[in-house]
Length: 60
Image: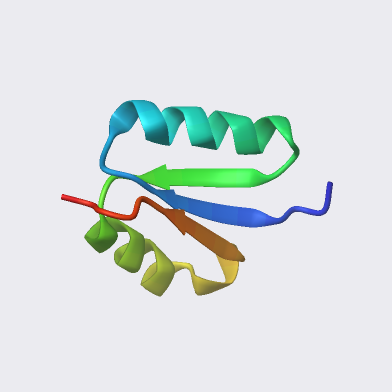
């Protein structure tokens, strides 16, 4: 595909793994993290490495 990079945020491990795998099967580069804090840290460190985010509606 076109090297589209997505950051997936979900505190439920099973959901996180499934979504990252599905995106990768569709040719989308995906990285998964378990918390909003982890997501913000990654975005601050590598802002050009993330084109979109997908998150759980209610992260604990």
